[in-house]
Image (tube, helix red, strand yellow):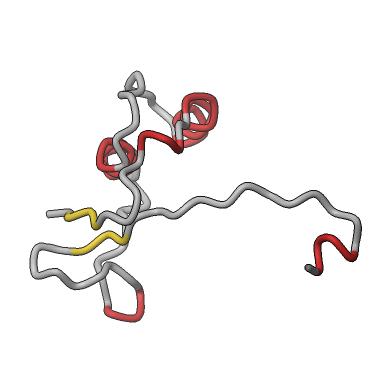
Length: 88
């Protein structure tokens, strides 16, 4: 309603699945989940991309290149709605 009042277009919304560990606990900072290794983030980015059922991306050597490709190839329709993703 606020968007209409302000004359703004309604954005598209999407549900992204919850990611849980092997014990079924959601991954979050509040539950002290292990952080992504800032020195080597690309392996986990590619792994999550795969869990989200996206088409594989070429292996890149930088996070910037990964995100540039990911943005171009993102397909929301490929995500299983209301699913839970398990990560090891």
